[in-house]
Image 1 (tube, rainbow, N blue to C red):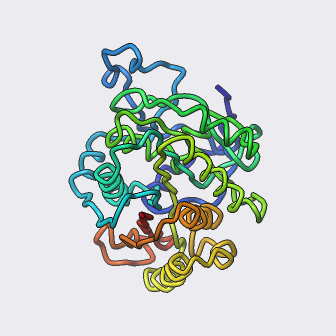
Image 2: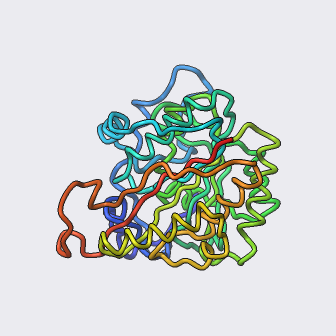
Length: 317
């Protein structure tokens, strides 16, 4: 596994208040404090024994996870859930839990959970796309990686394999406990997408994901947070703009948005395009922000970088 020179610690509060702007992992690498205890989670079956060569769920905390699940409520879905958008900040963990509860009830045939998420960091080993072929040491047992789907990312899209990046970046890693908990028999495949990708990338990625749906019974999860660095009133305005673009399928408008609207325009555009390819319809199921979730009045001192807003979208047919 690659080693990175430690120069400046990463502030773990990005999971509570908002994503930092794109950082260099080689300059800012420092492991988060919380990680899975393999001695507590190892299973008796040989295939579920957790090994040191597996990816860590570095953002899992048992008490927090129980709280998310107790607060998470199922969202209404008309038909079979194909894909969706969920936050990656664990401040909104109840929204993540609600989505996976909904998906598990809607789909009993899911073989692979495909997570598409923004890349928050860079390293010498990763350019614009990142994936991993390693399995995850999830809190509830080994979560196997679907290597055939992962091969689509490396062979068709040119994604680099970088285990350290994958487990370090919370945008995908934070979802792994939910995947294993709600879909214990499924596999996973993760792709991190940099904002430096080419403009035609969302269409290309959507096509590859549609092909993946022909290989496996997939549930596609787009890990996306929305407006950043705004007051709650400003965030509400931006969220209204984003909502209109998503529901109208205006991918051109989405792809030109900044972090005042969404942290990964390419991931969001891919979601809209994939929904159309799969003949699904998008429903906006939830919308919130850090001030609302934390249930405290907004002030500049409590939120020095403003709030981050969250959506849950579900696509079904």
